[in-house]
Amino acid sequence: MGESLLVGEQSPVAAGERWLDLGTGGGLPGLVLAVRYPETSFTLLDARAKKIQAVEQFAHELGLPNVRAVSGRGEVLARDAGFRETFNGVISRAVGSLATVLELSRGFVVPGGVIVGVRGPDVAGEVERVRPALELLRLRNVRVVEVEGTDRATWLVTMRAEGRSPESVPRGDGIPRARPLGVDHP
Image (cartoon, rainbow, N blue to C red; front, side, top):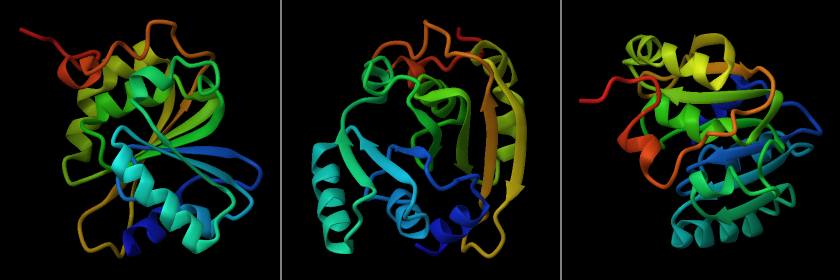
């Protein structure tokens, strides 16, 4: 939870915005962000319904009216009219490689929206490997910031969406993880 608080302090979240916690798992960092930013709406998304049931219970017990918990796959919901390009920002902590996070997140953010990836010690290598994907996804202004005071080495990688999301992303179920954009595949 401490890491989520520190991540929240360095995230570009603002009052009145709509944010998505992609792959929320047990609700982190989304629940902590919802407490810290009560004037911001948070949708916590995970593919596992059991996790989302627990998150709904946590949000209820914490009295967080600004939280909505949704079960579903990012590849599907990012194409759904109720979710596509409707969020000011997407944050993701434990979904997979940075390339996977970017592809899954891109369809959710409005033009000019922000994608925030919470990353570990290989952040420089990951950013370098996703350069081709950044171009394909029209993501600009990449910033890497170390989150000080965490138990494990943690960085935030933030970027802005330029224009609308490419119609071709995200690709079908499992493809962003199995065949990341911009990476040569044998």
